[in-house]
Image (cartoon, rainbow, N blue to C red; front, side, top):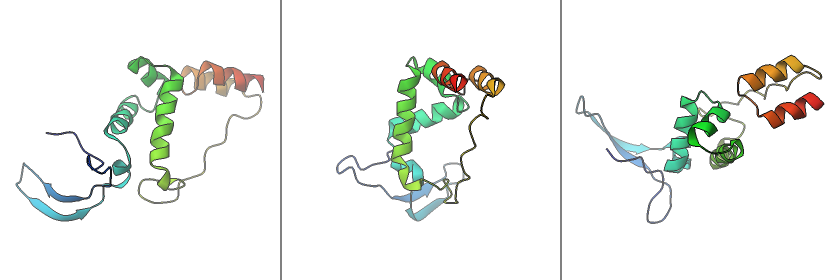
Length: 132
């Protein structure tokens, strides 16, 4: 099976899926289907998202697995976010996304240390939070 193409190789334009087929049942469905947010990503970005999900959204663990710095992994994640920026403020189903959770309460050292231990923030971020 071929890797999913998300852009026309000739023009770079958006692709529309026109046929779906199930090899198990032989059922074929024809029509025009939007790739949604997946269609906004390059194949490499799709691979990155898959790896990030496998790492349970732990960017620091993923960076180590890929053999890159945390900042490089964060930059790749930022590129994915930019690619799906048309969905800013909405989740993948188009519903309004909940507001971002607040950061640590002022002086909550335990919260910072637990986030650091869980790999949810870098050492630099932890130090910055502990200094405030």
